[in-house]
Length: 139
Image (cartoon, rainbow, N blue to C red; front, side, top):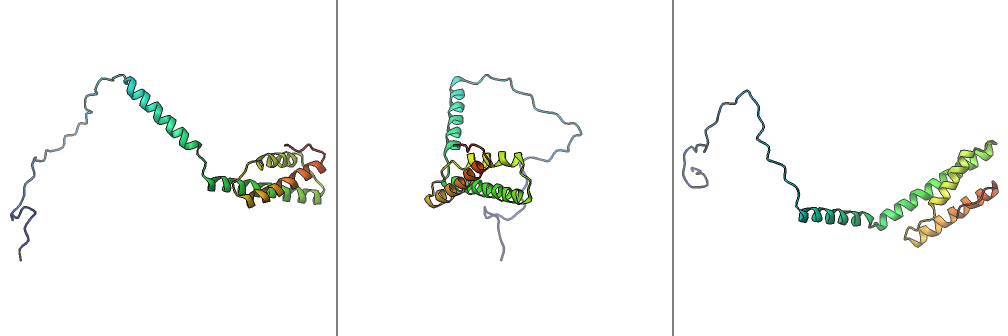
């Protein structure tokens, strides 16, 4: 059986343009003159930027939940460090500042009622520890 090309003819095909020998010099094509952007294209690009900014402002519920879980874990880590430093007899001012920062980060809602309840308990514990140390809890 003989197989023919797509057009049904058998035979070698030739390329449309003959190959040229490459030259050793490199040249760039002539640059076109710069044109000032028209007013309509400028407005269109601003509208595109506004759309991008609006999309960045939309929060994903899973992202809010993930952020709340991360902040809760960080607060628990600082509480654990506080416990170890109190047991070791050396309380550091930097640790107190980190505890205040952790308390401020727990204010946001995650959108999940159960997670918000756990975060509220962590926040309460952080504020109790701050009150024990004589610091004003941040509200």
